[in-house]
Image (cartoon, rainbow, N blue to C red; front, side):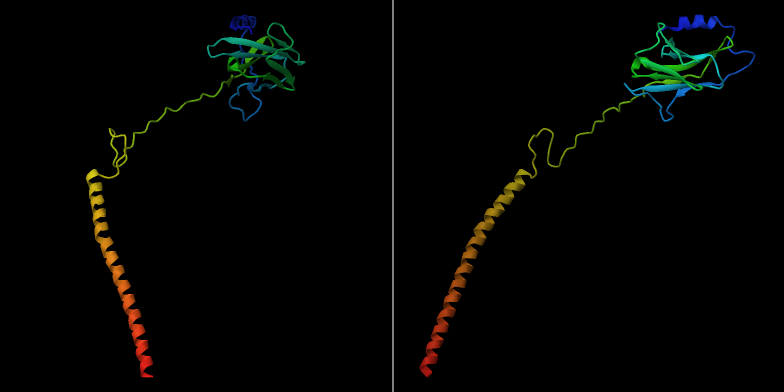
Length: 217
């Protein structure tokens, strides 16, 4: 696309910007009202609205560095002339629809970013529309957050093996456990013997009582 010098030479061919205070309402904007930013590899359609009939419109783009690029001229009969005096373009589509001059970026890429303007030549005077910015949204990445290491109870940084109980405490519990075994096991055996002796005594007493009852008869 042609850079800014070509447009500057074109502007010098006209008398002045504006004509005796006369103004024309020219607006460049996204066709879809809900569009705020272009999407990668997606079509983007812009439109230029005029307040009256005219002789055609130019679409130009200004990049981040301030350079201007010619895109297309659309005549009042909807005939298009792209850069290099071409009738068609692989990257753009353009047409006139009533009072609208429409421009379509077929597949929006980073090289298409910039501010888009609509220019009109009315009575040998150039009229510029306000610019329509078309940039990808700025993405910010949050810095990674680091959390302090947590030390569990009974675990030290130097000791790779966790210890839930103190060594002396565990030894004391083991000793108490063995003592309980030596005390309660004999007691349990003695209780069992007493129960057996009691059962035998009851059985013998019942047999003796039955014999006495038979003798009396």
